[in-house]
View 1 (cartoon, rainbow, N blue to C red):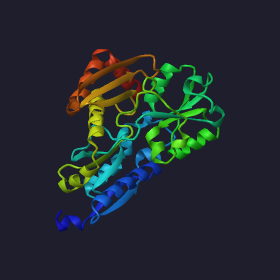
View 2: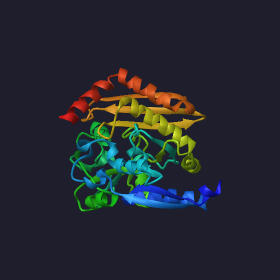
View 3: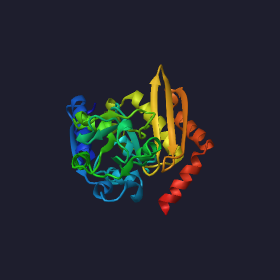
View 4: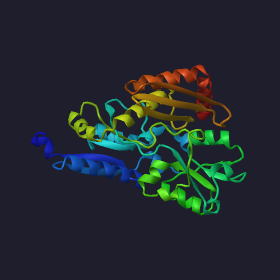
Length: 319
């Protein structure tokens, strides 16, 4: 690497939340280990999504709520790249920016954390009327389908805030991403990993997506040391599926991907808000054709009635 690159300072953008910083500092440490002659500096900020905590995400916009400020700083040159939970990164990025790297995935499953009084329960043995906390319409729709006898209540805030509300008795159980709990060193709080037949996970859940400027070849060369190809293929398929359906955090869309012997299998679901209607499908192909697999599955679900559900949800969200 030329000396002018080796002596530069590279600026990493991150949200200020505890989980975001844990993830960003992991990226910083890995890059510092790979490129010891480069100084990697972390710059933090609060995004709009971090500031608005008293309104459900589905009511205040799309996933850009957690990324726009970071993207603005990239485009203006204040930072060189940003570290995101990939599930927060919109599938259509602003002009001039690209997904430069996808890291190895943590467990992408949803996890149930319970109040102490329910330590002997699994999700299918919680009592009727149990109050379940989730801020995700995807989780809400799927769990409402399987467990219509539960009471669902929105929950916002960082992981520690949500756990405190649970422990204070506001909820009987809450649903969180297993990956976030694992990364925060809180895997002991996971009471049950929800199987895919109960809750398909969010697009990109468990992986980190590093966003950078298009054409910034020096930065792209650095980021490639963090790329995990199997995870990238899985997430490309998932993101193509979501992009083709034009879904965001306000649409109940879930996925599950597996790669075996070079073949990628993508399962997807589009659900109505009340969980009464669920359109599912599966497509398998070469992992190198991930984008095509995602697009094909979206087309398949549209032909089965998914578009009608999406139109209803979009009408509901505009009301």
